[in-house]
Image (cartoon, rainbow, N blue to C red):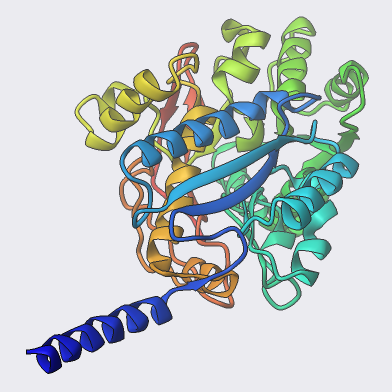
Length: 398
């Protein structure tokens, strides 16, 4: 009997050792916790984007209330960087070197993330970025950095295609943020217009994030004779542009980048009546659109907002965007199972095949590979009717 009991004990211990051996942990991971970090602009010129991070933090609370991921609670350390690249560097170093996070998830902004991209890759830290800039789809140079939203260049090409097919005698003016965000939109527009770009674009003008106003730029664009405006900006400057355009009684066909199309952060401050007719794009379901009143994904999102982010506006696409980004993070971590190393995080993120997330428009699926990090690269055009964005046309993208 003793021999039998001993054999049973040895067998149990052997199984326990085998199970333990299967677990592989990177920094920030234990049997009970997965620690990740991010920076976000809770203050500064892009503070409207702070809503994204607030929704992500709320989603993490919900997941933890449901038991976490494979029994591990998520600790998301979200630090304010004011959309200031030097501050982003400071906060990122703290998260990596002091807090010892597994990776950076949904760190926000093109310029802030550009400032830490070399550091993240030199230290082999997963770096998931809320930016569509092309530099975050460069696995040959930056294998640890991945963009989590559609390419700005692709969006620029989509607007170019629409202009060429639908606007006769177009004279295009362009205003763009003077960083990788704005320049990628401009590059996409130029590429999409092709040989006609030189004759169709009558004025290109940029602004700095530190500019108190962009009135002079808008006045110059109107004076150029442009009847089409492509506006690649963040919410604060989108609102300034919309107000000034209306004040000047200028009525161009106005294309507004996804980075600036928030109803609550851009259109409402400008005045809804001033924004009627603006064209933009989005890959996600608009919670305010009655089309989705019986949609389970939207229903679950609205319940989440009521229970976990009651101070947020459920119709704010920045909030629903943060919800979707958090779902992506949770999906990647779930796929890792008990192999929660930095290397496996990147492996799972770069091997997504036809993944569907509940708040994405139907037929939009996420596909990534080790040579193509841009899995979120489809969208649909939409037009503002004075109350909400109304989608039209087919799913577009690359």
